Image (cartoon, rainbow, N blue to C red; front, side, top):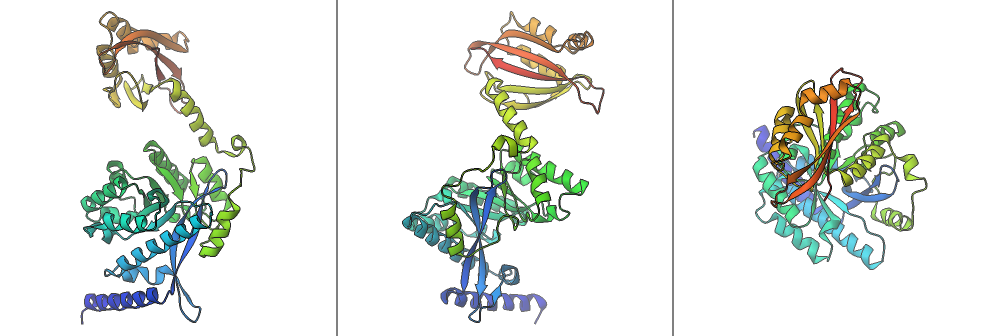
Length: 406
């Protein structure tokens, strides 16, 4: 018998044993809570399976799930865990216990099940559970395995009202382009990226890059495997939203998790959020305030004749390029102005004029013009370029803030 056939035979045998364990109720679902990184309030949990044999021996999932994935035995296990989670949430509702979203892991093999989303919705609906209380977790490694199938499956899952999380993100970094193209809701940062306790410079740079990437895509971030205060402190500086790990709580049986849910009903943050938040969180609050007034924010390097757009939302015109040559941006902007204002706009924000203003010591250059919107109506718009300095370079930088006055 070949090694491949032997592995298949072993997987089939284990699948049969797992099915028997399901029937005998030897498989138990444990719940590992997830907490807000700043307030410490519980926000959700992940469902994790444990095989508890009749003699009390606990078999951890790492000892049998990889072998099940060699065949299709993992499919039955995933559906079993989902049903257990739904039954648990139903019991919580009947007992009037606070419920939080539960993340359930699904193998990539489900992407090839023709009626996966129908089955998913059918099971959840059978228990009368809101789809928003179930989060579908897919491992990062699945994203490169026939990505078209995975992408289509994710779209259907989200269309059905379920949130989708990419688990173990960063373990391979092969899925960056995939996440860019496919809409998911959550990135769970793999615990391997915390292996050096967030004290290694390279590790910190990688983590900062991933969190920045996630925030720009407006994804919720979850850090897995957080075990030390040092890790928590650094993750807060990255504005990580949710923490999961032994520092806060280990996976626990249903009864213990229910007690935790009951305990947390009336909990309030014990500290002033403005005092406990990380600097990056405070910065985000500041940016949110800026964006309420300035719908368009552009960062430009006059020395390099370049720019990129930081925010573009609810502005008069939505055709502005997101990055490129600054001179071309000004020409594009002028083309959207009222004919009587075009020359004024071009002259005010030409690089020679801005550099001259900078050399005179001016802090800001601004002008009010009439700009045509996507609806064909001209509105008064104020554009202000503020000169800023980065201590690392001598380049002349500006931040352009554009505000609709009407």
